[in-house]
Image (cartoon, rainbow, N blue to C red):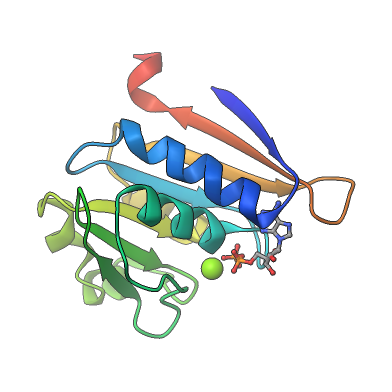
Length: 143
Ligand SMILES: Nc1ncnc2c1ncn2[C@@H]1O[C@H](COP(=O)(O)OP(=O)(O)O)[C@@H](O)[C@H]1O
Ligand SMILES: [Mg+2]
């Protein structure tokens, strides 16, 4: 487990861009933390680190956005997903074997359906307005 304390959106993005260097095809990143905590900011940095030139925004209505770069990324927002049928309709299960890096906002809503061997990134607000604590768990490193 590792912890990073961010003091600005730019900090969060830069951390995520560095984090992206360790990713390989098919990696899954589950993001946790409530509205406005910085999940999309993290994905923006991650996608930038992988070399995408696309705009990154929460796929709240589209459910999934795709970005190209060193690795292809599928960016999910599970805010409206509450059961396996909902999840199925996002195409999530097809993406799982696609070789895309999957990065999932609102993973709380799909916890029972997440695969093994994933990264879990929990973001929490700190005391100062722009402070965020990012806690990273890599299931593969605890095996
Ligand atoms: N340290 C920080 N890291 C990320 N976002 C921050 C930080 N401090 C303040 N913010 C603000 O919090 C909001 C995060 O928005 P967003 O990334 O869309 O959150 P989420 O996807 O979790 O709902 C933005 O308005 C951003 O400017
Ligand atoms: Mg978001």
